Image 1 (cartoon, rainbow, N blue to C red):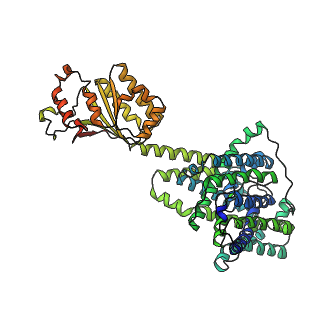
Image 2: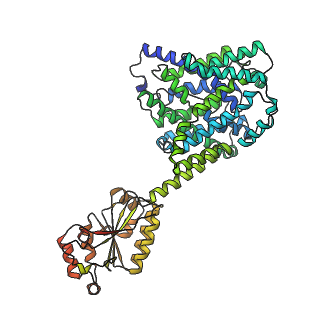
Image 3: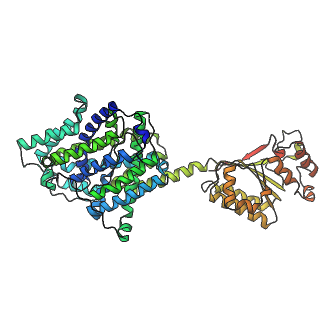
Length: 585
């Protein structure tokens, strides 16, 4: 699975570039891994375990040359909700189940379908996640105490307001130092990771000038062990699978989306091309293995991937090195991490939330004032005030309904009438709104699916009242037919057959015709009722005319209808035809 093409022509110069990039990304990943773990409601070392395992495995088995994987901000509200509802042990099982799902998405080559999630939905839930992450760090930034942790955003905001009188001035000072360095370091010291510098300097200040005055990792979670946990396969039962399936589905969906988005960003920065299905398989395998060592769900990290590329990464080896750097730090420096104040980590996550908020794109979609704007706002608000699952679910539903409404206007249904401009048609033959009482000809253009069939159904009911001997449907411009469209056509044919009338179809494309063949529609109608050209279909229709009924027609005599057909061996009645548009709304 590793793929030799990603290492083709690899040499010492490439390794040196990977070494530099891997070390830099590894250093950047350490504070983020611990911060995301804490924000997700678990111990900080679990974030480090995840960075090590995901960093190495996704680089070796994924489908992107530059992808860096690990704990990410996108997972924070989801994982926190799972931990609060089920506990850490069940989070590991949910992550394992999600890994299986993601892996199967890759196996069955469904990677490209994840990309079809509408942009307003992805922007909406990403911005919502950013708000949740940012708001979740307010308490640590100000050193608030006596807060009751709630799953619901509004209740958490209420807790913050009620307990804001417990502000710790030392926490505010520490957080301000960290935030200042996080913001200014990239501008003045671009070679140094701002998150790491902010964490180190603010921790030193807190330890030297007011020890014991602010909450630290050690005081909140105890000492961080300097070794990986032992392998332990979780005890999974059928009942647990059913219980955790909704959480696993959300984790899998979010993990797949974030991974592929990150890979697309990497493609854009390097003019490369990732393998979506292989990437999902690598991410799935990683999320199956990480929980066995205490790791939380991981996905592609856009910011760390971009850092990897900007620092000259040449191959997936940089990702492996990044994982090894985190492991080295864990083994050698873990005891010192216990002294890091929670207030030092809060600005790091706030800064991540600000960067991931998609504020410019959010504003751009809102200014459009279209249905996309509504989808965006609904997804965003529901993600924040309820949860991600509800936000994405309702957002997708609205997007689908919007799409169906839009597509319903793309089907055109035209009733074809004789054209008075045709030299073979006498003016007195044509009356406004009239048509041949024995042959009805309709042109259908566009997709024929559940969102567009209503108006066609109404027109067919009108046709049945006049009971023409032949209904000719010209379908050369029908691009797609679903089972709802096929069911309507089947109903039309059955009604006509019941009254001993006929339906002819001309010009249908191969793909829609193949679908009709699979459903048995062609067998019902009869292969002989399908024609490649409208002219041939009209010849067949004319052969079915009742000459006695023609005598009462004020438009054409039987001989004139026949002459029209014989003279023009393409759409005879349709040459230079006048069409009455019946637009669908």
